[in-house]
Image 1: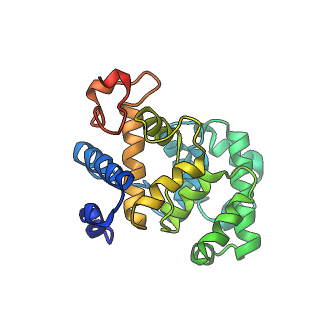
Image 2: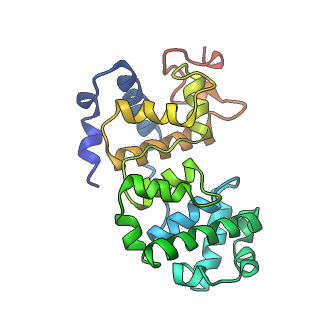
Length: 237
């Protein structure tokens, strides 16, 4: 992986207290969990479909839906775009909210067909800002989904913020609880080197910590971040 060297030299590349704390967080999580090797997909399009389907569900359900699409040869813009909405909804039924997600997938495929003539390689080569603005113009694609596609499919150094990121950093005193998506994103992107591999691994590790330990009812005493941060949560004291 191209970014491994950058990851191993992180401490020498940050020059702020916030950056040092984020590097410490990354090291604690990586040493505890090991590399997560996200995103779990064989192709860029599979990753993009997964980013839409994973909204409000767990990954096992997404995998079932993707396997349905794969089994019928539907994982391509040319196949997904003309597929009747009700048929697409049935194929992705395991992912939940299947009617809503079918519309969102169709909207995304329509965007790729109309703006890039259905050529995914053209889409992935476009400028980062143009891509992001285009994705956010697609109904049903919000900042987290758009940035996931940019990071994991287009390999752009954009940090993805999700509920786990906000929960962990606010509980540990790194941000105010009311901090916005973009304020939290800036914290990572302003204090860490621009590296897509690093950002992808870091995001995946945060998700793992959130799922395993930093739940609504946290398991602080077992978490690798138990004493990390300027203000560790009360349950960790």
